[in-house]
Length: 72
Image 1: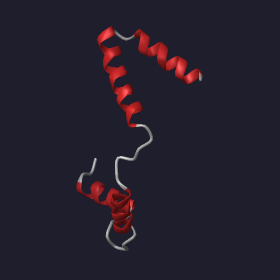
Image 2 (image 1 turned 90 degrees about the vertical axis):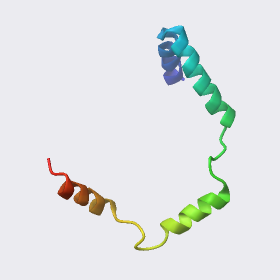
Image 3 (image 1 turned 180 degrees about the horizontal axis):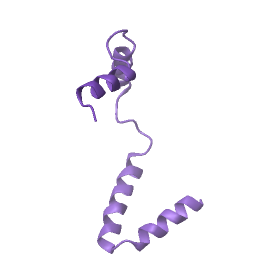
């Protein structure tokens, strides 16, 4: 609970308008609860695409491509 207490202290140190803005964002997150933003059908479609071999480039290839195109 110490992290929550520290965060609340930081929030209380903000100007009131910023406190209200952050509180509104927190309220929105709490109202959403643990619901997913995607339906089970949408998750299934994404997972099916990710499971197809050769559809996506490995991370190392993407990094190498960017470094080749944009050297420092």
